[in-house]
Amino acid sequence: MNRKIRVAIVFGGQSTEHEISILSARNVLAALDRSRFEPLLIGIDKGGRWLMQDPDRLLASARDPRLVRLEDGRPVSKDLIVPRGPGDAAGSIDVLFPVLHGTMGEDGTVQGLFELAGIPYVGAGVLGSAIGMDKDVSKRLLREAGIPVADFVTLRRERFDIDPAGALAQLGRLGLPVFTKPANAGSSVGIRKVTDAAAIEDAIRHAFQFDCKVLVEAAVTAREIELAVLGGNPPSVSVAGEIVVRHPDGFYSYDAKYIDESGARLELPAPLTADELTRAQAMAGRAFEVLECEGMARVDLFLRPDGTFLVNEINTIPGFTAISMYPKLWELSGIAPAGLVSRLIDLALDRGRRRAALRRSMSD
Ligand SMILES: Nc1ncnc2c1ncn2[C@@H]1O[C@H](COP(=O)(O)OP(=O)(O)OP(=O)(O)O)[C@@H](O)[C@H]1O
Ligand SMILES: [Mg+2]
Image (cartoon, rainbow, N blue to C red; front, side, top):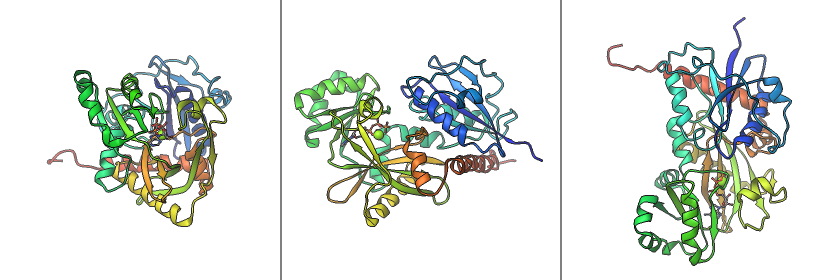
């Protein structure tokens, strides 16, 4: 019998979502079909060290983000993921499954390392990951494809520092309230809802603490609808879920997401008409393709009172925790976690084979 496919799950990381990533990785591991796959666990600690983790210990770990932590495992061997050139993977990992959120995980950086190592990996490639992480670039591409997004203005730190008044003068058309957000962040970190013009500058400066590029976005009155997309040709789109926010912050803020247990409620499935669901699924599928996604993504939409949808954002490595939308939406759509994880790995292996078959010069 052939040996099992060795899957390295890479998780933890140096982002604010380190603990969420551990919970997600545990669920990916629990869903791994051990008759086909053999797990290898690579935990990235908050200092950036790559440490081997024990599967049984991860499976036995707490389910509360406040209680989980990586074990102080032995450092990952330097020979495991090294640049070998595309198609020349000689190491012992057959496929990588990044379960990392935010910068240095979801933004194409780690995907670039996997490319150099010549090892197939789950999810979006370098380009799709980088696009998905950048709210400015992704919204521009969506708009260019005719997919509606909220009106926004992008500000850059260097320019803003020289001429804040000039930057603020561009914001008039957005009206109030606006949302100020770092272009590259997640978990609502650095985001504020501004209802008073006098507070905009401070909110922009706050967002600039997290990124050198900041979006000021017109607030839309809308329901928040999320869909899961699974790669393939064409990609499949799940049923929809809804986030119903009930929090004094007045939006799906960091506190509403992670701190206040009653800050938001998930409606599964979202109460939508058949027509709304069809339009939401079509928009999510198109956004996935326009933004160069592969494998998986969660697409977050706004549904306005007039029945029209906008794309808010796309997440190329969605959460896999017990309460995460991505696996729940697939379960509701008839794909259980084990089938989902197998499918994602198979898609990664397919892409790896396609890329290995590409010609790299004119003469070979
Ligand atoms: N233009 C807008 N109009 C209304 N609400 C908004 C707008 N932009 C953001 N919000 C609110 O702020 C929340 C966070 O914004 P957004 O999804 O852009 O940030 P995020 O940090 O990337 O979140 P994630 O963790 O999903 O990646 C949204 O879920 C929504 O509640
Ligand atoms: Mg969001």
